[in-house]
Length: 511
Image (tube, rainbow, N blue to C red; front, side):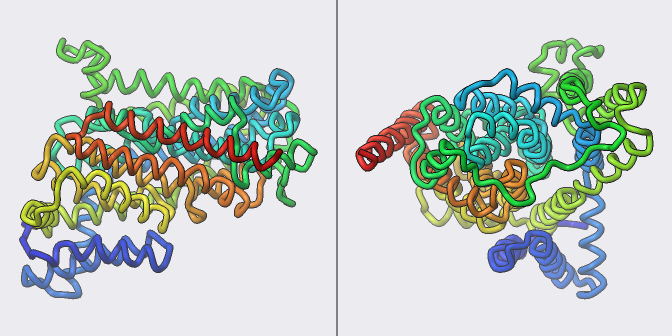
């Protein structure tokens, strides 16, 4: 299949996907319609049958773009999460932690720390942290709204800045499609300091945990929690583990598999990157990480962690063999939606780049339009934030925008390429963080045991504050030629100053 140039028609597939996503609030059907519209344009322009050619081309591109390693990794990760829950390891850890953490501040900081440690995947994060920390936070009268916020703010924002995570692999696969970067991992790592939304969100979480300077509806929830009203859901009951495993699970049943996953991930990536190979050019850690194929390494590490869990649980009869395998099956099933979104996102990226030359057209259009390139990072952040909030998916958002933004900025302003790519990722995380239809938002409220709309309404004030400061940072930083120092000197003081003013205002109102 040879690429063709169809001018303005080349932007129709992503536009159709975006508009349908905004209207339907459903990303799978929207991406599918975007794919079919693109292959229809290609079929007509190439003289193919408009019916058979459209469908055949769509599946041809899909087959060539599927990354089996990523699909396997997500499936194995889902299995590991389900197995740990079955073994009662997460609940045992929570009961142990409740005896060690005796204040609201310590329990909140421990929740944030656990969220930071579990950086492999946001689903894994949300599914684990809530279960583990609820007993601790309840004992110290932390509102469920605050618990859900800390969980949510250390899920996607952590995963998108962790080089070893499902998010890093997903971003890397989209970067690889563009063909711009020699090392997608190095490109991903380069975006981390510029990812203002994620970093500022984490800073705000720690700041609020330490100071207790909550504002808006969150302050009301915390005052209510001090009186013993935590605002739990009616069905807030942890899932029952394997009946034969009840009371047998220990802290190590969660800690050991998680640590093994992290250790295996690092070792697998180093081995995959040639750290112990024959080429001395890759005998440094940085070079090996830059040379590795992360998706292959993560498959090995997730399988290794699952083997460790098997060897840890079955000889002690923490779970039965059948219970273990049932949990594996349930965990794999839980990852089917995420895998489906990825496959469709890879496909529409391939249609746009390799068939319709969308990137070439958008490059020509923007370069000739006269829009100051310094404004583009802030504009890109706002577009990504709006789209991700409306659709509730970060992966779908950056899968649509990366194939457009990366070729565009590599031609229009190479110095702003990494900044603009970071703006895409930051804006995508904003929607995943606070959209009411986001998977992680839903999982965070479920994991914390708080009514979903209560979590959405209390978190929105914090998320919007960070997003506004990010937009200002990208605006000024873009005009300053992509200066990292300028961005941070604008965004961070803006956020902390706003929190201080809101704190003073709240104290004045309460007096």
